[in-house]
Image (cartoon, rainbow, N blue to C red; front, side, top):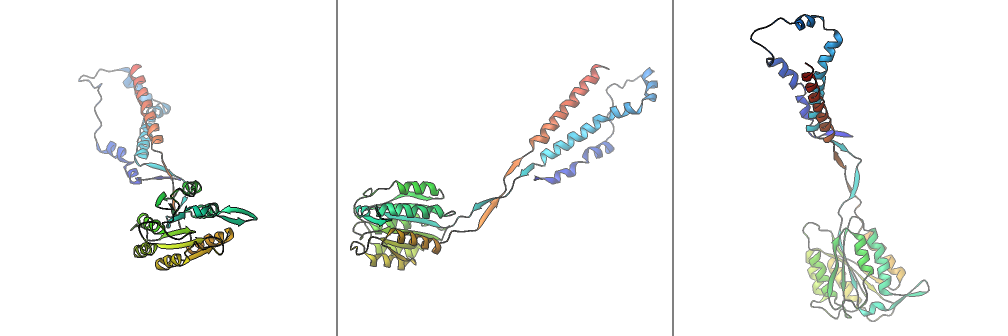
Amino acid sequence: MITFDWPWLFALLPVPFILRLLLPIAASGNDAALLVPDISDFESEHITTAQRSLRRWPLFIYFLLWLCLLCAAARPQWIGDPIELPVSGRDLMLAIDLSRSMEHGFTHNFRSVTKLDATKAVAGDFIEKRVGDRIGLILFGDQAYVQAPLTFDRTTVKTLLFEAVTGLAGNATAIGDAIGLAVKRLDSEYNQDRVLILLTDGVSNAGEIRPEQAAAIAAQKGLKIHTIGIGSRGSRELNEQTLRTIAKKTGGRYFRAHSVSELQQIYALIDELEPVERDTQSYRPRWSLFYWPLGLALALASLLAITSLYRRRWR
């Protein structure tokens, strides 16, 4: 549909007619002090109706020209169909353990896959579903670092996750540092709905801050942490009590994944616990159209100028 931003300008449409009625007629440049009889004075009495109409058509062109100028000044716009945009939802950060123990295998569909490969596949599907959330990625081993800052670009985050390899950040496990880094990156006064999903298969044995201390800071900042302990049954490397404490202090939940299928179920459950925002905003694209009436006005002005020159030449 076509709309005008300044439709009140059309109130100026009768201005030329008002001025024509109120202002005196300008004197002709051909007026002379002494009038000499001319045959044209007698011929004017016999002007036909067609000739009068021919002489009046420039008035119609002037009116059309004025209308085109008003249309251009009123800022005409074409408004397209509404386009829905996802509303910004949560700030969600994934913290993935890259210690060497993540190379150990899971049995899935009668074949063995590493815990890291299983995590990539399941977490990748989880990322793909989080439309409307800002997603970030932290990788940690001896140290923790941000692989992907918070972004709506889920494809890039997923790609960076798939490129991660064990040992990239060292062989140890610095859970406290990973939480501390997430607290720093998710410390925003504009979005209070912030979640960290931390996945590890080992005991925190590196880093500058203990996991319990980092969890206490996260709780003060209002950061919710869901923890996932991954590993086969009977694994002694995993400190489940620490992961439970982290989740409890921050209002999150602790999950234990013994297999790929359980890991899939955990991420599906987290997806339900932290649902994606379904509200949407919409906008309607606009295209300016002022150049069409303005171009027509210029064409009419050119026509009037050519007509005026033609008349003067043949007088």
